Length: 274
Image (tube, rainbow, N blue to C red):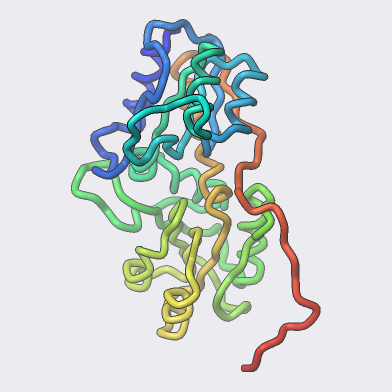
């Protein structure tokens, strides 16, 4: 296989034309004519995952988040991001990014999150004009369960992080129909409130929007780490490539935790006043 073949499979699954206008997706570095025998899939293109690419002998690093989201005038080796590009090139490894096009794709990031939690997907949370695309997903649990149990279900389904999983709402509220959105999803709180769901799983929820949502009677909220919410996508993308190449290419999922938070501390008492 050549890198061009890998790109063709990825762009069939996650069409670049469906990416947001502000996004930076596609091939960052690498020669489309280079042969590929091993691929590594990750969420973040960081020093850790670039090192893992080199250590595993992969010729391609496929990342969800872009390395160069904002315009740059150069990639010198003494710049943190430039150093990653130089290391990849020196080791004849390519970098390809699939971001908002993977978010909106049918069988994309939110599908992977929903399936990891154990939901039967019924449709998108926010349908897009392009057929087969949409933000977030809605799905059903096999049986209703209390929010406190559902929050643990989510925690069990995702990789451990310092943040863990937190929920807002009545712990005994029964959860049956659920909306999910991989990555930062508080922009969809208004949509979620009118979606007929019992809970919403996403990342990066902020205090005021979350508080106002719950106070106004919206569905329960389950907040997870951004990296953890998108990590199930790695295996999904890997399976797409494995199926396409029928075992002719070794496709690995990164084992590195690139969630930026490293320490958690709890207060000895709750503090504050009701």
